[in-house]
Amino acid sequence: MASLNTNITASHVLSQLGQNLRAFGNGVLNLLILIAEFTPKYQAIQYYNSLSDEDLAEMGMTRADVVQKVFGARMYL
Image (tube, rainbow, N blue to C red; front, side, top):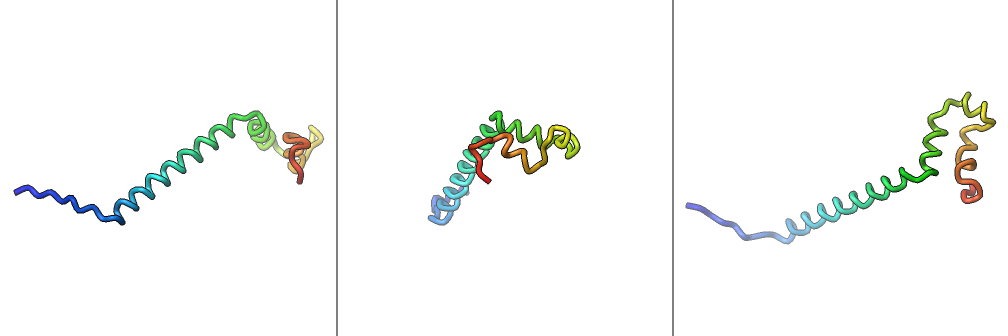
């Protein structure tokens, strides 16, 4: 004999809602990160971080100078 249970508890519904909201929030956050990674400033930071300290020294820079170089007057440290 088949049995069907339609008793859905509120805690189950809230748990599922929480999981869905968390997944949605993670998706939005991942989208914002993806957008940020395609900006020229992010790519410039990645470029300078890929250089060795010696390479930066040849350019007259240190790692501390990278943020100022990329962001200029828009970033105050």
